[in-house]
Image (cartoon, rainbow, N blue to C red):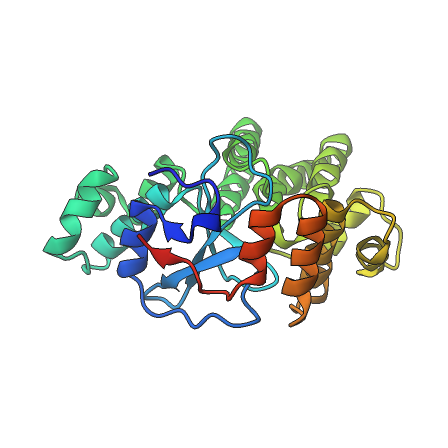
Length: 282
């Protein structure tokens, strides 16, 4: 089953398989309103499914980590997340015989990650973190391989064009090279994406994009509270404001639900207004 919207209160088979293999996730008002909790990894990362209010046709719900005001990209879909989980468990020696069936379903061969190293395996399958990719790009720069460093940035941007952190490698490489035009272009593109997808400090990016000091959450607050703005835009700015201030107001869910109803997204409004953990496995 390919799930594009959370309103039916069920998980896809791969999302359910991942959830069953994770530790408990105590959802609360601090859980991001657009995230369905899945569980906690062995190293303490809280994972969840992210639901875009208006996804592209056929788009999968990505798996994210953190699940607070800011999110971290973990995998582009539940299928990819199970693949990454299998690789990490395998290298840690924790992949059980019962896990082999689900590993086969997502194309992971036990021992594959260990044979070439986990970081290399995740890179090959485009499952690595943005920080790992950035580190590789910077190593290319140290060796003087500018083309390889730029390719890292382009590759990241193509993996998740809707995620600001995916553009960080391109931006930092351009800054290090003194390519002002490319750095400004990347920074401007990042500032046009949700602030809760940055995964790192955003003020320096804002300066490169042309924002003037002081750089704070004030613009987001003004936009979010402006009743003349479109409801869906106001909802997006509310989430950006929460990311900028680093906290999720307990009343945010109800405010978002009201705005999504005003935008005609009734089913999504019901999801956002519900309990954080009310989506169950199918």
